[in-house]
Length: 358
Image (cartoon, rainbow, N blue to C red):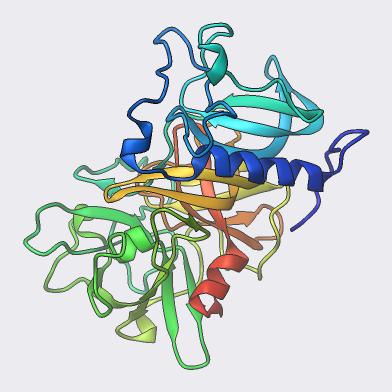
């Protein structure tokens, strides 16, 4: 994993921070049976800064959604120092939580920071359409060849609801090319069988069942509860190679891959927010993401924040994130909140699916 230009501290290394992050991630993010949490202390409504106390090993406070290594900020200003960072749904005033559930001020001498991220969810657009501003290419229309950044999705048997995600990139093996996106965009969170039809545009965006099937689900990395996951990823093989292209809408063709680094400037094009730019805030954050089928924990994820506006929103899941200037791919977007975007490292995605960029 790439080294950040930020400093860890005068007395501790980046490895110390990662070890501490891993320890606290296991304490706070490891799923536990419901029975084990019934008697857990409750946070007062007026406060939070809350995490599970050391004595309550295996329990986690539902306000904590991530533990990572990122830059410490003070009063909103960067310090240039890496810290163990706790991401919480809501950051409450100090002193508003019972002592046993407060965040530590430091961990064995390591700096600690707390950042409000809101609830982290898988970004699957469902049940409503997003508007287009008419300036950027419209990703929610039928396009042939279909280009990365456009609307993509599966069909639920019985058409109980419609959804939409994003075609991230064209990938390949020695035998075929595939459309890359997320498990929850192409495989409905493990629930679809290989061979299920994939539509462009997604049915949410008025894709037609008779004319707009573009591919079939080929392979997905199964997401598992009660353990750490690394990727939310899947591929679908188009019915013909001529139906797809590799040029990302508004951005152009990707130029290989790169390892994400803190402070790297990035951009993406997605089904809902189209083109946005941002900054990598962390390359090693463990998070709990809410899905329809339950909460899943992911380790070692990339965290991105937008430059002038939110970097992503519901429906942008499946977009690839690229370094600005080089267009090297660094991640696969799959969730987040109104302020933070979460992505898998692209190397993990490609290895897990046994493919490479086309």
